[in-house]
Amino acid sequence: MDETPPAPQPFVERLSEQLQHFIQILVGAQRTPPRHLKSFLTGTWLGHPLHPALTDIPITAWLLTAVFDVLWVFGPDAFAWAARSAEVTVLLGLLAALGAIVTGLTDWSDTYGAERRVGLYHAIFNATATLLYLVSSVLRFLQPSSESLPAAILGLIGLAAVMYAAYLGGDLVFVKGTGINHTAWEAGSEQYEAVLSAQEVEENKLYRVTAAGVPVLVLRQGEQWYAISATCPHAGAPLDEGTLQGDIVECPWHGSRFCLRDGRVLTGPATVNAPRYNVRVRDGQVEIRRISKE
Image (cartoon, rainbow, N blue to C red; front, side, top):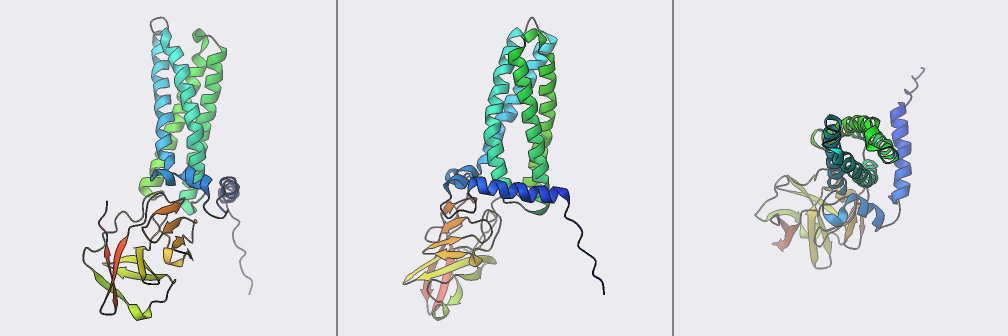
């Protein structure tokens, strides 16, 4: 019986895979820990994704550019200073856009499926806006303000492109859940709950248990017991399937590393610490309790 050959992979998917692979090489995503460059670009050191913090700067700068351009168009004599001000805000937006693009592509390199496709369109519109503003900036500095109408028009088109890109960015976060903290709604329990028989626990082995409906990762090293959320905050990966190195667990999906002693994130792309649990052994049972959120 003849089998139907698989459908060819869409061009967007092929392009995304190749581009992601190239970006991962550039940021050292496949290198051995601690992967300082990727951690820096994702915002691990900040405790918050770096990309959205940077995107506010070019959007604000280019919105101001549009205001200055409109003022100049309707009052070139009264608002001659607006043309000069627009030159400054365009340039400021371009400089900030470079950082936003680099950090955004780094974040995008860890996405899959629909979010990867939307993220690619988000990047294309942002890149288009940046190119338009670059040309606009060159025209502004090469031509006198009295002849900068083409530069202003290019800027307004660029603003439309960046605003649509921002809409797609909102879709990524608020609809598809890209970049959110996947442990934010883990309530846990304020009371100790028995989850394992202490005799069954082997040393230096990761155990996945459930406490108050929340998956938790438990580790014993000698007389020390550690427990953190079993869900990676970055993308929701099961940390119990990760690699254990001393008291550090590495996420099996994107390589984020967490210290089991305190839940601290050591290596990106994760930016949020893993929730911690107190552990005690009573009557031969391992009991855990969620440490209150800070």
